[in-house]
Amino acid sequence: MGPTSEPVQALIFDFDGVIVDSERVEADLIIDAVARWGTAVAYEDFGHLFGSVDAEGEWDQLVGRWCGRTAAQLDQEIRPAASSMKDVLPLMPGRA
Image (cartoon, rainbow, N blue to C red; front, side):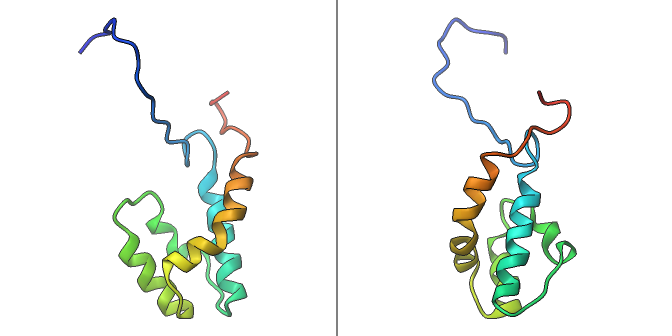
């Protein structure tokens, strides 16, 4: 399908891991939050879930097994810091 003369109504940008390395920030925050809850985890324990849209159940299982919490509680714990940290990330190489 070629260009049209219709005005663009909306654009969706998916920067996570493409324009900025936001996954690393979120992973670090997950490790820190789970450590505060008494369990040590590493990237290798959950990295396979990044980029998956159907991983909510797996997150709940992992977080529950690690520290008896839910993925929603983990999200609540890291979301305030994640948002502000992601806003100041530099662009990935070649994206400027």
